[in-house]
Length: 113
Length: 114
Image: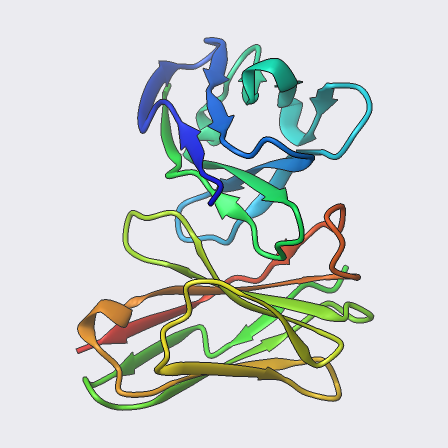
């Protein structure tokens, strides 16, 4: 079974700091990759997705992610975070014939003013 | 834009009771997915339906069942509820069920079992 690993469970940054959240997956075949954000008390919202093509994808709110196939990684980045970025971030993978997304354990990001 | 609608938003049940959660997908979406997110956990895929037929099954307990109706809404039926069933239950919908079909999530139903 495929798995998704997020390296950091809790991250605390100051406003304007740069952000990088790691994500690795285990599936060796063709995958679709996603980053979702969950603000406190709210539902999952899609930040960005990778299906094919340019491995550097840009999403909403200034986020971007890079797919590195050789490393099975899909790290999320943002050059300058804001207090409003405080949330839970989930990396997810969809592969093979499976319908469901496989999520990582999530990273709780806290941005201090 | 219309989003995925889930009802109820909050539900409190006693152990061994039954519960029914409802999901109304985005108009024209034909695929529905159910996920369970325990406290502090990542969402776990339970089951999905495409064109009213079960299309994939994840870690759904035998005590749970689900179906998709002719209007594409879906219901998750949960029986013999246990304390461990307390969680946030998300429904998502997509247009088609291919790998590249984006899933749009609803706000969730928070189930508390006492």
